[in-house]
Length: 281
Image 1 (cartoon, one colour):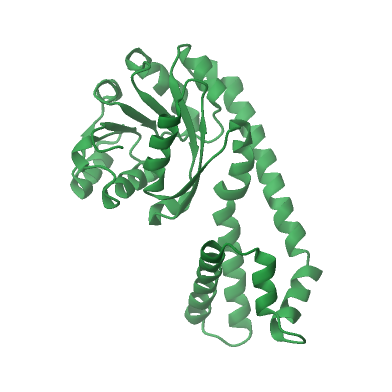
Image 2 (cartoon, rainbow, N blue to C red; image 1 turned 90 degrees about the vertical axis):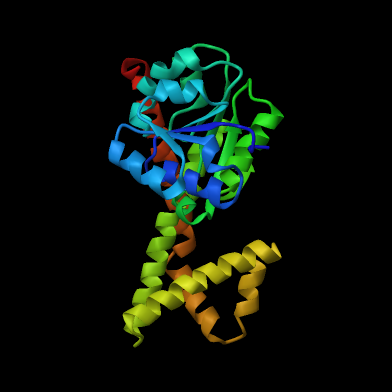
């Protein structure tokens, strides 16, 4: 699906480079089909040396030469970058934004033309090709456009499609921010191991592998987490004693609240960005 398409990645920062790495290592496309842009020439040289892709500091030239354009720039600067490249954007090109908090409506308003738009929310695990990514489509995007976007982001993890792009704030609160919650949980588990006598390095390894294994078991068995939890908790055993302490401490409620608060914060930041969008353009 992607092999004959030229893809421009506008912004060769962390997420942009993760995209390049995923696309090439998964053989979704060849290095010769990718153009990366950035204002930092040293970063472009690094990406070119690592992956063999074409690079340029000229966003307009990259957009002109491509069928698929991915805007991987920070939300605060996407408006002027969109305006800069607008003259070369039309219905012949698939346009993908990964700018957090920037709605499809804001992009449509900024460009003021009929375009095939897709909004995507990946997470930091893209760096190890395990991102949990959500794709939402604009009104002019076709089913094939969605399939292409999902094929791109499947190269750096697993992707789902949401019909309602208004749910992207909830996605940000759960999977976008979620790795931070898991890092905190792993750190706390490791601290617990240290408290009961394990060496720090061993405790951190065991905590990390335990989270990885539990997640893999959930993904591969597709069982409800409650059922798998019951498989670990024998009557009067160690796991149920630990779970009782977690429930007493409010772990479940705290995590639910964390997702809710992060979602609300994403909504607030999105409103600020959208409010200032026209001024920045």
